[in-house]
Length: 442
Image (cartoon, rainbow, N blue to C red; front, side):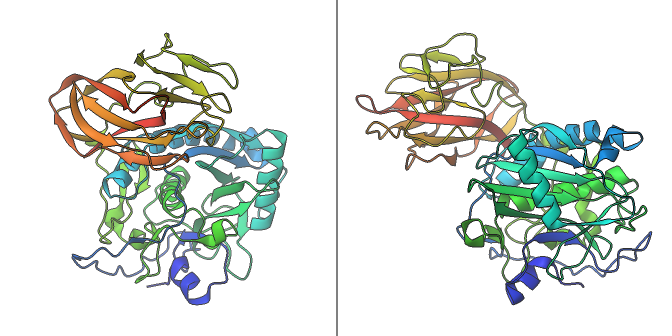
């Protein structure tokens, strides 16, 4: 069984990326590597080492190469944009939440085409990809990065990538990879790279894939799961501090299952790879567990003036009452806090304020997650009560002025409409801020 990139990293501590792939898979239909059986483990083997996470990932695709603007490759951006929106906002991310990885449902925005001319059959470098990412951020082609941003770089067909530092190329068993670097203004730029199989460049091929799109979606799912749970591995961001990895195996959660044929399943018609739970067992994605999410989970409606706030606004799917409302970045309510985790606005509550919305549930057990912080420019020690139909299912006191992901315990509901309500508890002007609300089966 070929060593994964993570196992090499832990032995050599000298290479810059985490990659998915299989050795000797440059042939058109590679022979399957022998799969190591995963024993039933009672002790947690995937552990958290204190690094950054992307708790509410905001993905954006970069389609690198002019071929994406002409047939036949011009059909791929729309299909991959739709896939990114689906996988970041549904059961795949909910499975990571259930597994206890402290990440939740995210989102994806429309991708962008970088019309750089690439030569069919050529090999580009990871350094070149970084330079294009930085240039496209600088020009505004890509959205500016924040703490949840992940750029997914799809390289045009017939072009390979050399990872550099002697790590090999996508013609040598590497199907994709993820890593990070500090951008020109010091902001982390986190990204994954996915290539098209075969073609004039002779890129490696995934055995389970029946089409180029199958391989692209499966590899994307692998890199997405690893990038949100271990975004800075062996980079110059946060000194490369690890997130969730199995040090016994020397692997991230996608590497652990990539040679297991049972890990490749269909989700909403797309081929995806199921990753490992904290016991190194297959973390199953259950399409039937699709959960209806609240409307406007990032509190972007109505639009609040720049550096402003509103009290009990109308025109939102949420109902605000009492000392509650919306605030945009850098205003009187939020100037002491980082920017909103999702979008540019957050909800705020003081004592007795409420924010609520009715959501349709299937019968079952669920948890509610959100990012929250104490107001930073006014002494605050507020608590957020989370209620379902008036019954408290979570009581959460944010620990600081930086946003962090919090979750309720599991609760059970019958099928039908149920009201989610957030209630502020505090004294004086003590204020809690929250954003990026999501619901997961659990």
